[in-house]
Amino acid sequence: MPDGEGAQDNGVIGPAAAAVAIISVLVGGSILSAHDKKLSLSEAGPVAEAPAALSPAPPSPSPVFAQGPSPADLPGIASDQGAPANLSISPEMVVKFKNDARVKPIIDQFWKNPIAARKAFLELRSKRPDLSGLTLDRVTYSNELVLVPDASSKKPMGAKEMREIARKLTKSPDIEYAEVTMTAHPGGDK
Image (tube, rainbow, N blue to C red; front, top):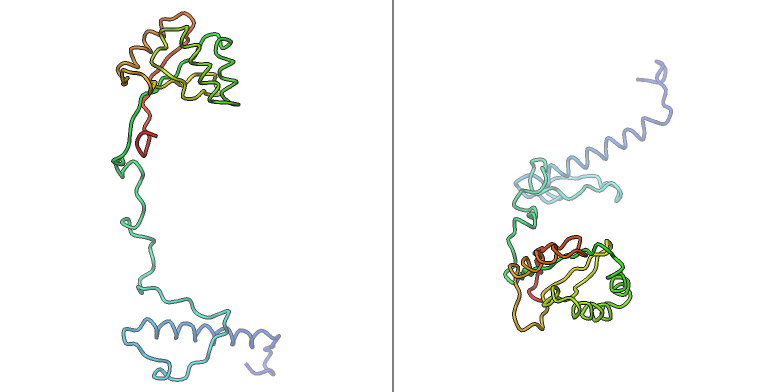
């Protein structure tokens, strides 16, 4: 509208016109780049250059809107990928004494010096034949001993033998519980 008919230019029309021109250059450029026929800018005719901050993003490989990665590109859930070939499964036994005072020195020492705690467990084991063939692997924050088969034992011990020891231990008056679990160790025996 002309100035005399009530229209006012408060400095908005100029920047708005520039924005429209920049958008048309960007849209025109993306249409040209998406076109099957590859045209160079000299063949397409004169095109005004957009400022560096407003330069168009590289065109997508497909003119269809992106819908995210295909399911084949997504990583699978670890359990769906199968077990590694070098996986070893070893039994371990969690033992809780009714009176923590008997094993509290071993547990407290384990947090400071695991090697000394394992030696202290061997002393306890020498006084308790029901713990023979087992060695201390670790302790828990609940004052439980986690025992595993002793690798230096002459007779290898599997889950069946561990369950039998656990059954005998639970009959002991000073044991609250003894439970055998199977733990998978990726990478084989380490």
